[in-house]
Image (cartoon, rainbow, N blue to C red; front, side, top):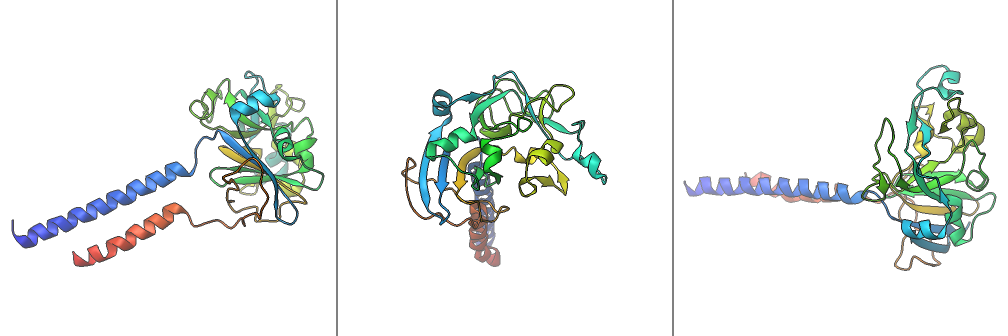
Length: 292
């Protein structure tokens, strides 16, 4: 093998190594970005944007110290979109189509979690945020005085029986056995369902949620969009949330998660670590490619 061929062979190996490093970095970042959660940070934020109080607890503490919702036997459901040009069909008053079984889950009422930092008042909004950046916001009334057909909003950390059909979440405690946990589920009663199922349907949302808080998928109503999984934050915004409701939010967790006062970081999404690593490695490979 000539020196020139050996040099080319070595450079090709370097290219292969570079690609392998890139793929490994992408997989590592994707895996670290989101997954089942065990802790939740509850933060109360003033109308001027300061952190009033903050506390972090895990699911074991919640189970031992706060009222437990659910019995591990009763299944709770949300409803996905019912695609139709007919609005009456799309709202599906009788809950006949595309409802989603989330299992026989148990967990903690968000209202009780808010109580850890002083609670909320009418006019406030409560944000529930997942580790992947997804978040939803609700008015005070829907969290603290919900209509029974909506039921309490519960951060679930245990599943006693998996869904009969559809998405499987695992059986047991988060994170190893209940791999959708912790998850936001509405514990609706069964007063509006002909089969006696506990479904928070699309028409229930129409009747219990203000228009600004309702969820739509491709212009179709869908309560299943509320079921954020891998929840790790609850925030109380005094006077309401004024940020971008469509943007992922940054974590407010600090070294001292029990109680702190300070400015709230803005909610502008930070550059994705995956994109930064990919860009850096791509730039590093440019000179090598030019030499080949």
